[in-house]
Image 1 (cartoon, rainbow, N blue to C red):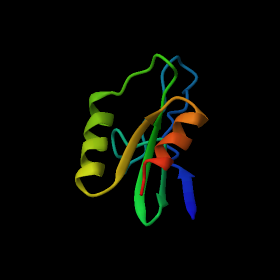
Image 2 (cartoon, one colour; image 1 turned 120 degrees about the vertical axis):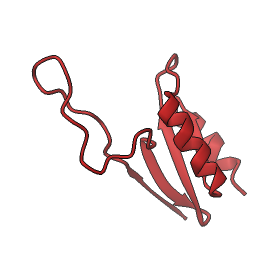
Image 3 (tube, rainbow, N blue to C red; image 1 turned 135 degrees about the vertical axis):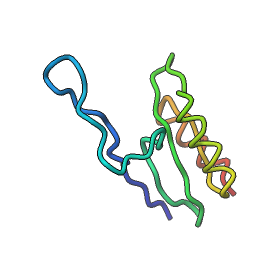
Image 4 (cartoon, helix red, strand yellow; image 1 turned 60 degrees about the vertical axis):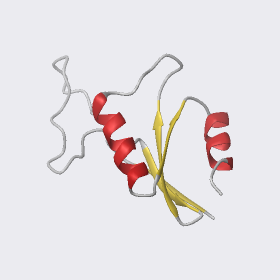
Length: 88
């Protein structure tokens, strides 16, 4: 069974060319989509075709995997499908 949700960590524009302050308990680098699949925590960081992970995102991914979670950088729906197929 699949159970996923958006993390809601998108920074909204503030109208002055910048972004609103991060929420009080915001975790830097947290993945865009989090969930549970086959009893494991799974995290997807969504990027455009040329996007790369920030230092905070790499650290979050390392911590997730250290704690038996799965972390994936995805750029398409096909990437998500292939990532899920790797989870046994």
